[in-house]
Image (cartoon, rainbow, N blue to C red; front, side, top):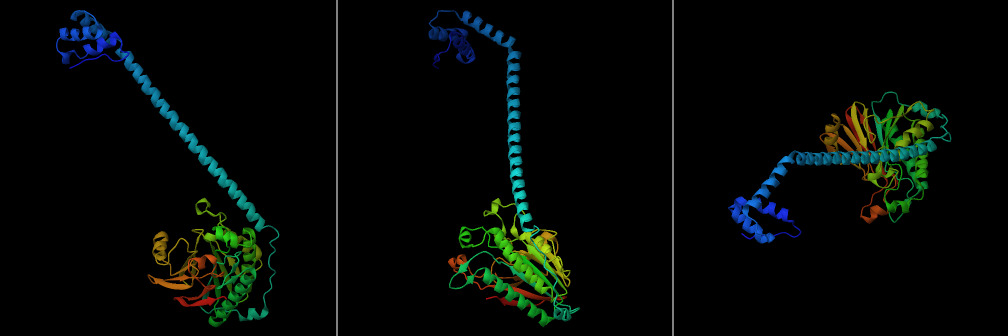
Length: 395
């Protein structure tokens, strides 16, 4: 085997390295021959052997110091790792604190917006019950109405070959819907009216909507809230009680990107506060809160469990199973919107009712080759469940 001297290797390093391999080389004389050739010396094997033994004694004498130094280095490394962990923890805590501060600032800004909507300029409706209507009130018929007020999209301006929609048309369609609800009430002698409202405004969630909107977010909300409050005021004259529930719609969030939206940061949830202020003089109007989920209304009509959501997170085919597993209660009637089309599906004996939109077909619907008329649903409910479903056309 050939042995060489490494670059910048000292004589002592060469001696120690070669002598360390003595067992593989053979005898001390053979080891000395290799060293003399590498170093240019003529030393005896004894000289190299004694020097190597001296090296070994020196190492053994200082072995504990070397080990202590090694342990000290390991301790330093561990301390360095712990410092790095603490530094990362502080960084994470600072990031979380900044996130909480941002969210709190946004919530405070949102609360300021709520105060603006619900300020003293929300003047309550005067109590003005028509005596003729009082005489028509039904005391005990055993039937109630379930009405949907969804996908209104207030603020969008639509003008295409299928549909025209603006604030004036919105007012006409709501008045038309109110008239048809009253006609159904008289036909079935319904006692009470349950209304589920969702997705009142067009919002800012798509760029094309921002181009089609002719009202800003607050103006959209104020416009539809007043029209809806007027609708409830009118209906209160024909029913023993009017119950109003609100569920969040995806168009009504206050930021464009879904992933940036905070829970509860949605214009629809302002509606109950506005209605309470506006209709406070009407004792037979009850503005209800969602006690389980903000975006799911759960209530009972004549012994029937009624669940309602906007529908952007729920499919008609799976909603019954999902909600039964989620809440441990099987709904008898499910009310969904979002798909802009009236319809009914029976799933595990549960009636899944879908309501269309009040705005009708917009430019986006036409661009994906879909059209829908402005329509909503009215259901007649008794103790046995759904009696009939009305397909209400609003144009």
